[in-house]
Amino acid sequence: MKKSVFIIICSLAGILVLSLFFVSPKKVPEMSVDGSNVYMENGVQIVAIKAGGGYSPQVSVAKAGIPTKIRFATSGSFDCSSSVRIPSLHISQILPQKGKADIDIGTPSAGPLQGMCGMGMYPFSVTFQ
Image 1 (cartoon, rainbow, N blue to C red):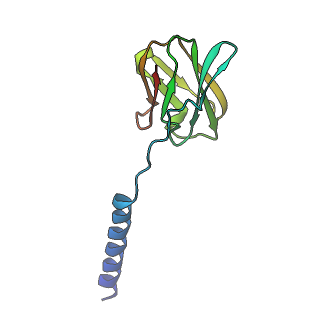
Image 2 (image 1 turned 120 degrees about the vertical axis):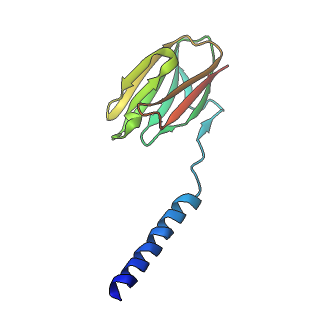
Image 3 (image 1 turned 180 degrees about the horizontal axis):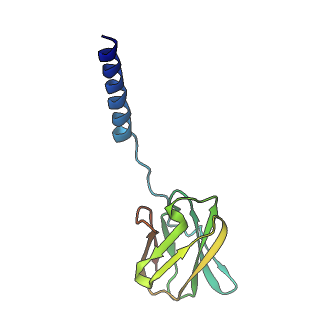
């Protein structure tokens, strides 16, 4: 009797946990279409992105035709977002666990630039206009 009650309680708890996982609100990607994370520094356009548990903002807008660096800021990042890949530029770089790291992407043309973590789980993009 006690064993069957225990099994029923565990089964109900498992169903509750799974239902909370599937019906909980999903995180909406943070976007910076106003360019608040993009600025000029010594003639170079900087696109600032925070790395840790994904990238923030996930979507950025910057100007095309300007020498550009993506500046990743980390603070205790131990997940796969500490490994950055930008396949179209053949870039793969490990970020420091704490601090900032610049990735020089040259002078981009108009269009999207897609990046992701080392495992492909966390995407980010910069649209150059």
